[in-house]
Amino acid sequence: MTSPIDIQGRTFFVTGANSGIGRAAVEALVARGGSVVLAARSEARTLPVIDALRQRWPEADVHFVQLDLASLAAVRDAVERFLATGRPVDVLINNAGMAGASGLSVDGYEIAFATNHLGPYLLTELLLPRLREAPQGRIVNVSSDAHRIVKQIDWSLLDHPVPRRRTFAQYGLTKLMNVLHAKELARRLAGTRATTYAVHPGAVASNVWRELPRAVQWVIKLVTISNEEGARTPVYCATAPELSASSGRYYERCREVAPSPLAEDESLARELFARSDAMIRRALGQ
Image (cartoon, rainbow, N blue to C red; front, top):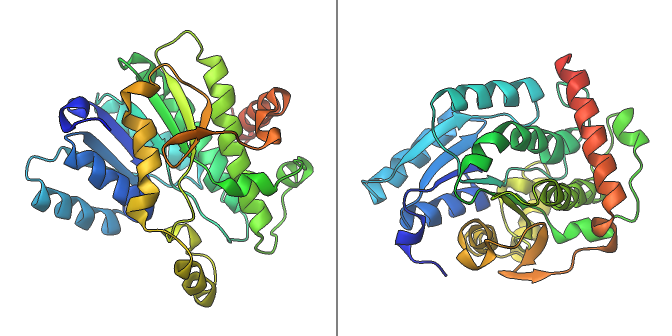
């Protein structure tokens, strides 16, 4: 593990930062001297977190950015406001996500796909110039081993979405996209100072399960690890010096592991990028 001084002067942009794995990651980074941007939908829920951080670490350099990943226009506007501050970004941790939800986003896309992949994809693209300016920019996608349940991608369900019943399979599909995103982005960033990582944080009792029935949430919490344990691998990939020359790989329990064979499909990753770009252009009227 790196020492606190190793991340002083570095800025970490963390989504879903006011609860669960995101909040645990923020606390770990602040404790080690990192500057952190807490990106989340709710200002009312995030400002008390910032107050608590400053009470515990009076010198904490922490800031809030309002960000709704389910709206592509909101993502664009949030990044524009952030970039206007002139703040650097050394590391982006794409942590926010949801499972078990049904319905469509404001842009007309399936809600889990919009929140878990399309919004983070646009966020990453818009922050990429700032990340490439960093001495060693990093993008960390919090994925899941749920990506292994997917055997193929039915693009028609994304191109012509309809409200669907809650399914774990849809969550797994978006988590596969998180891995494909990191791998393809690594290929596109080859030769630069920016690197990417996808991680399985473990089965965590986090707010990602908020859309499931309360009884199901209760059962999940009986068999899951803590948010602090779940934050270890994302924080490791965000900070470990020994990973500075690694990119596009998949990690679990702070070590590299092989993702599913589908996650290694370069043509599938390229198609995901092309389709994501087209969907974003259509939603934003570009």
